[in-house]
Image (cartoon, rainbow, N blue to C red):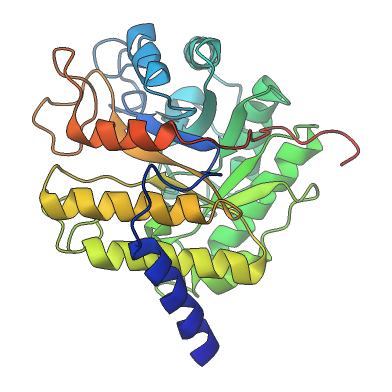
Length: 349
């Protein structure tokens, strides 16, 4: 325990050391969540109740140096019946959006933004059984199998499922993805919102940091996805950042965990307002990941999207062409040299 605390202290000191332009060898994936595809209920009308990003928006973030887009969508709209076919119109919309993102040189992280549920059924319970979840991922994986620059995020923020139950569901999905021949990089969240601040705490059915070491991938080509906000309760629902120091410490703690267990991580969501403490915290989080790019694959900021309210504190969608302050930080980090990441594992490796 003392050794771990010492390591965390050293990492925190490094995170708090100024890092002009961020360290060389920054994480290769630097991007944003383009929100909109997850809006509305399952019967929502496209263009009225939900939307995928336009090429104009995609181009903007590519020109800012982003290298990845996390693309949220709703499971129920993509697969209207569990065990059934994917909806032709919805999969086409997603494919078209992926093609636009790839056209502009960015990778795509597919994100079923369902919080561990299908309608009101929790993953792992009837009818959204582990087998149903695996079936969904097998069908989606076939559509994007081995496409360069396409990553699979198993689920956005499972929150009230036991860690052990979530591990079973995640492993079932991973087996299904590999069974159809897809070698794409898989991002695996934990339960309890996949919070970095609670990663090693027993919140529900065991600590993610202990239980999720049970992830089994036949290709050993996965990373852990965590989320972290800077407000007082790490919820991302407040404009002020009383929790900024704790958020930085949380990322430092996960960094130590990744190194200790020889794993890789991805910060799938984080965000903050232009409050002074928020901007300082964001800078320190970027620095921590940049200085530890041996274990951090990258990050995607929450959020942007054409339908985000202009007064939303975390919004980095350009307003009337004006760059938002958080975007300036993101863009500065994105300009740092980084090694290229492969989203598909080569055969034989």
